[in-house]
Image (tube, rainbow, N blue to C red; front, side, top):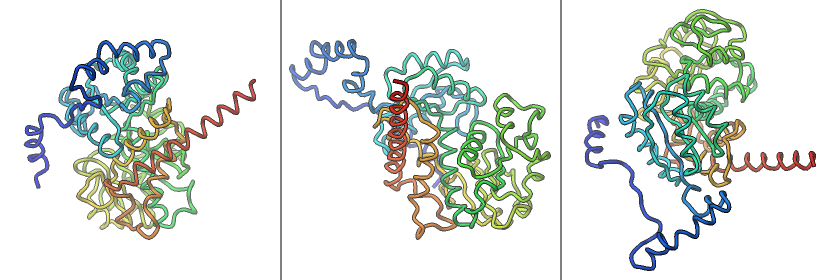
Length: 399
């Protein structure tokens, strides 16, 4: 099937992929008076007295805003907020279908960080969570950081953290398959692409103690003080590339256990894979064309190959992450998606694949495996419970 051609035809047919359905039926005078005026005044007054009642008396308890400025849509680049709407609608469909989370797309027409943050903050009281989407780096880092500080609900940039979580889940099972568990903490991991996804993957890999990470951009390996480092790249350079390796991707890939690509097509060759450690792991996640095809990677000796595409084995897909993350966060009314939640989510996804199922062509559960969202949600809930117990203990000590 020509997915792009047929998808365009379907979008004309659908005239939008989502719609609003009423939970309160209004079919007579009494039901109208209960759902709207005069009856609706009572829940308004309840919320006025206690802001927290909005979680019980409105739908915000299950509502996530999916927000973009259209500056980094898929691999299409800066195409504008309105042009990003089909992606945002699609994300909302996935939230509902995979996590039973109601989501609403919002496309904000500004590239100004202050204006974007102010806009999102001002509407945040209508939602239970904020999913940031397709915002260019390095602006996305500051936007997320400030919104986390200012908002009292979870803020999650899926391009960063969803990608990092699913990548680490795939790594956990790949390391098990290739006999590298005993070398956890000592693995050499090379990431090609030092934007939002690459930097976030690097951070989570370090937090989960996989090993040393070397990030590469178009100029080569990133290191402390490298010419052209932006603010976020310089920050990550302080904790990565501990051997201070220099050169292009083809240079630093030598003896690497793992390659992770979040860059562009044809960045890695079979000859580069041959330079890696024995039984190398190759995640070529650029879309629609990966950094190296599975065929070429295996020609170079790769033991495990994963991509971002559904037509190859081992698709690394964020849909396994964000529905469960927000399902769990909403269920316990979390105010933040913590680092512990992200690590727990990665472990939960990996654990869905049993040892009997695990193979070089099956390192992650299928996107339609109904166990996944629940497993991720339960992991998030458990971490939030631990956090509340810790806070309670700290409060008791202080008192």
